[in-house]
Image (tube, rainbow over all chains, first blue to last red; front, side, top):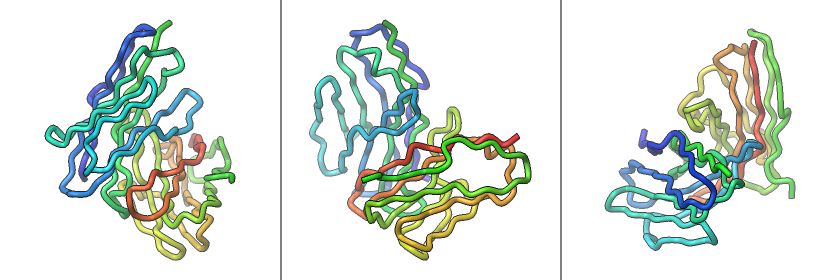
Length: 115
Length: 113
């Protein structure tokens, strides 16, 4: 299986610090999609962003930004001026098509924002 | 729209018991899937379906059965529960193709004792 690796198991920062969550993916496909999901303590999975393999433009949404680099197979997520409400587990995922591959998740990064 | 509805939210089973986790979506999505989430393991695909009458195995299918008789419903059956099946289960649906984002249900926390 083509893996998605989130090497950071847990990150703890103080509120207002910037923090970057790393994601490295494997793929043999030309066309694929990358996602980030947030799982707050309440347990639901919240969709944050989707990027396709043909669009390497960085994306910014408020305090969130994403850096997609095909050359390094990375799709990193940065939170600027972190807040306690950002505390959650964040999952990176890759989609190359339907079927057994489906949406393949990394193991997640637990982000703790301390007040 | 209700999105993806999972029931029950919590369940405790004894080893050997059977049960069905329900999943229903009202978005006319062709693709539906079941994932399990275990600590430190992320989400792993159990079974998936690309349409009514079509199902197939994912990464961790052993101990689970599925069927898809309608577009809306995709139940997950545990025929003889084992402690190793203690997990949080998520159902998800999406439109086929184009890497459309998945819509997830709120999850079922299952404990097998």
